Image 1 (cartoon, rainbow, N blue to C red):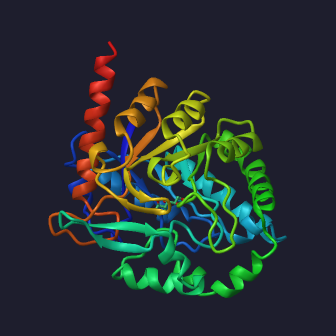
Image 2: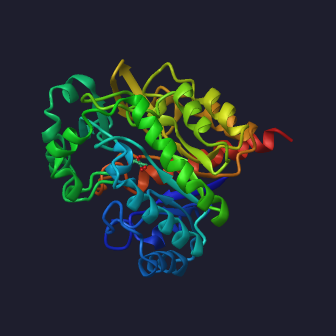
Image 3: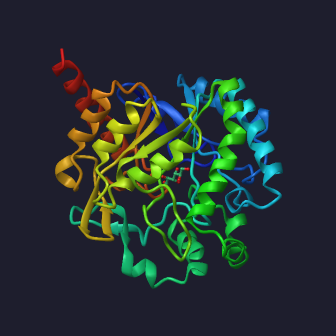
Length: 357
Ligand code: DNO
């Protein structure tokens, strides 16, 4: 496996690349451009600046998280073809600079959702939390404002203000979209772009819906073993692959994450792994815990073992971390707890791989 660390760019991240360089094992970067509107082509000069900043710090970048998908593609509007053409050009541009994997998601309107961005835990750290009653009590048209207020000025991934200011209109556009239509629109998109991915050797890795259930009357289609299988079946190429996010999928306790990893991993369809732990208090109520098994509800040993057993050689990253030791920054994306996550995951990996000999 190839360890990575998510970084938001020079003017967007509180963490300098020189600090990431000091994390044991020198992780690669999972990066993105955050100043290109969703749907537009990522310009070569901006890609080149990102890559050179990372390389100058002595690090590599081969994964992009995310190139987001324009809503017209998800809704299946006639205008989608223009956005799909743009997406193809972005793939070509990224390939030119050595990018191997693109993580993306297909969630309508909202990306990941939490009811609290800085819940205080017993140990005094802060974390992100989800409580179904709180979410259901929120008017979805206000959710974007709440996220903006809670983010303390940090742009949150997938919560682009320019897109979300038209929320009512966006909801209106999705009114006839059910799970079947959304899946068909994903199939249309994949069948258009996968030949370009094959030609340019860039693998697509769809991220699960977070949380993995439908919300606000909007359909979600990336949430279980069965739904992941339907996506794999849309296009037979290995370039049509998955990001397996343990914390996302496990929010539904019916999802057996190690079994999902073994199933799709042995087919060579997992290209990116997000590993984090959550503490499930009751159905629909969880906090993001430290990565350690005993701090949450997931067995991280079993999860990492599943990746080891399939000889996973794709990219991995620790996922969200808590805010600890007084750190402040973009919720979920501080340095300390994620660096601890890396040290722990590397430890599990070393023990598992050496123990196998
Ligand atoms: C949140 C992230 C998501 C994820 C996208 C992938 O912190 O897990 O924004 O990057 O859904 O496209």
